Amino acid sequence: MQRAFRAILQGAPTVTAFCGGRIDWGARLPDDPYPAILMHLIGDVAGHTLTGSDGLSRGRVQVDCYAEGYADAADLATAVGLVLDGYRQDGFRGIFLDARRDSTERGANEADRPFRVTMDFLTKWRSSNV
Image 1 (cartoon, rainbow, N blue to C red):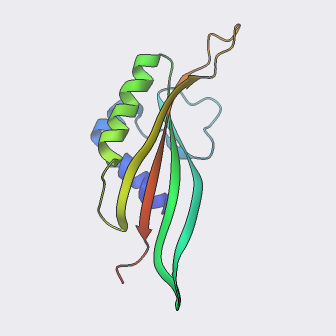
Image 2 (image 1 turned 135 degrees about the horizontal axis):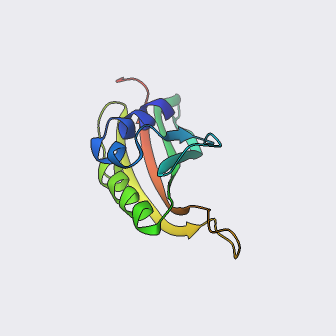
């Protein structure tokens, strides 16, 4: 699911116009410039029936959109939301925006830290077309 999720964003010109290929799971490279997208798998569980797994998993993906300025982080998040919210192709039976929040990693003396807009997406994924 993670490879397919990342591929959606990498294949969206409206997203890559902001951040190029800086779309990663888990951690960014230390010297990568901004804007960038960092994703985290928050949860993923397989669906079950009385006879076993039904092959459909439910999950939550956190997508963090980083930029040096708030407006750029918000614009990147808007582009990501327009691509992902309601997505229903390939193995995805649905990706839906669940929450959005703004934050920064700046403290009182940390003017060089980025702004961040975080979005949580609920996913329905089937790895095969069974």
